[in-house]
Amino acid sequence: MASRSQSRSPTTSPSTTSSPTNESESKSVTESVYKFPKENGRTYHGYRAGTYHFPNDPSEIDRLDFQYEILKYCFTNRNYFAPLKNPRRIFDIGTGTGQWAIETGDEFPDAEVQATDLSPIQPKDVPENVQFFIDDASEEDWALPPEYFDYIHTRVLLGCFTDFREIIKRAFYYCAPGGYMESQEIMSTLCCDDGTMPPDYPFLEWNRYLEDAAMQAGRSIRIANKMKRWYSEAGFMDVQEKTFKLPINPWPRDKHLNTLGKMQEDNWMAGLAGISMGLFSRIFCWSKTEIEVYLVNVRKSISDKRVHAYHRVHVVWGRKPFPGEQPGDAALSTGAATAVQSYANTSRSESLGSDFMNNHNLAGNVPTNDNL
Ligand SMILES: C[S@@+](CC[C@H](N)C(=O)[O-])C[C@H]1O[C@@H](n2cnc3c(N)ncnc32)[C@H](O)[C@@H]1O
Image (cartoon, rainbow, N blue to C red; front, side, top):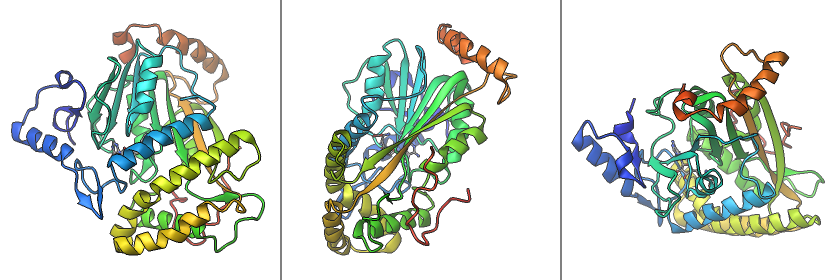
């Protein structure tokens, strides 16, 4: 179990961490953070190297920034759905380039926003109330007091963890009573409602390969459609879910979905190689050339507007109950709604303390974590 001083290296304000207990250990952690292993022309995170299979180089950074814009557009300009009322402490797990944390810091200037990642790929020039840390969220100990955060957020963390339920459970522990957790995830399975996606569609095959490789790597990408259940199992109450369509190209007639599809097609073109390279080379032992040749046809198929395919984005949020509050207790639940408003007004020290489950599964016999 790593302590905050051992593993949590700030990438913005160094003065905020406690001093290292073991200087050489701290030095090697810091060195590993900035030493990016290179494979097949891409770089990957150095801290806890090998656990996350997608790159962290400039082209992936651009793609993540673009993905942030895509999801914001998908959610019609929203960054969150939980009913937040002046949260004091906000946490973004696996922040990537930190765009979400920065915008949220701007929206809630009185809140302290902490965000963590394995890679130091966040900008240096950020709002004063936003801090980035290098930390592994799969560590049991987040080196913070329990019930610290009023709002904990995760977005596009598919394939990051051996068991996302553990992250939800830990977030429950670090969430203040009355506070919220929210996850925004893309379901990996490709959907099509009108029979225009043939069984031999190359992008469908690619999806199966990716799901298969991620399962073999022990980090499933099929998490989005299970989050609602996992939130309830972890103890969150009033768990809500919204789902959104994310077309793979501009095939829809609807203007919003058409624009979204155009953006997503560009994102696939920019990201397909990076998303494939780590998993296909490490798990299937394909060479860089084999992967590049394989992707030529996949790219073509992504742009085929005759195929009306899309991914589902699942957004789930839930509230941590107050002590003694039972799920389904209507009276307490109403009281809790009032209390949620008032906890936000307490001082920091006080506050310490339609589902698309059927998801048109066309993924054949790909092993899944559906039994989790
Ligand atoms: C696909 S990116 C999403 C980034 C951001 N949430 C967004 O929506 O743009 C996933 C991020 O999770 C980070 N990550 C992966 N495993 C992690 C872990 N164990 N602890 C913290 N961050 C992790 C990766 O480094 C990467 O930046």
